[in-house]
Image (cartoon, rainbow, N blue to C red):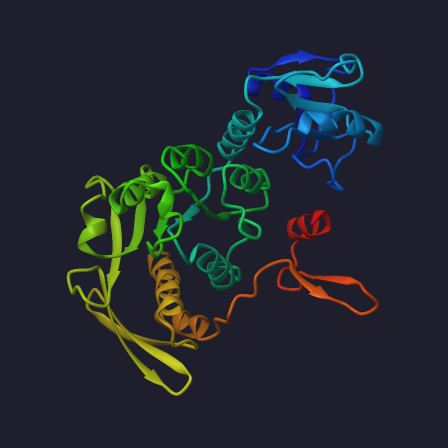
Length: 345
């Protein structure tokens, strides 16, 4: 990303105060400790319940940061940097990410649900990466802050995006939908996670489905509870192990260390093997297979790649090293954006 600060002022509808109108921006930061903080950084001073990033602006100026999006300019700093003054820095970050997303026109897969989002995202990356240059959410960046940071990493080299969206209360998903703008939706398992933020299960399902209001297709495990809340105008691509009216009907059996899934799709039947027995992994794997079917992969390719699925190691695992050291294990991922995140971590 490389943008002129004057253009960003216009995008954010901000009030600009500073000395260098032609500053060039190459990266975004919200953390004063980030190793990416330098003179081409645009720092968003977010305000949370326990912390106010405006308190760190003076020290960031000392480190060379010159460009800030702020709710207010801290005392005695008026002429020491470029300030883009807005009403709400978080909303401005989200708006900026939504604008950035609008500059690209390739398929974006949006994933939400109570469980399985990160696993499905990582497995899809594995299954589709031989054929696509994929941008995906790092770690579990699925929050009101994590989603815009993830989307801001899109660049001209990518031709497929996979982003997860997590919510814990009502009125959150619409903001994430405006940033991700998915063209393909996946609704994973709906469980009890974050139940305390919703009055009842129906409210929770209705809120999560807001991510898919503009998708070309929604992939999900067909059941009557979910069906009752899906907008009939949304095209669906459903699967089921119980309801033969689903687009894809699946039966399963266990053989040694693997589960064999018999897939009935249109007038064709084929089998795939996956190296898991637990219900959660089977469900997550089926969601991934459904994407491959939607992308018109041939059955042989689906069979081959699905059998190679593996347990996902969570990113950035902390381990105790020798001589009282701490080892951060991010060997699971190897792309440049992941390296920057790991260094910041």
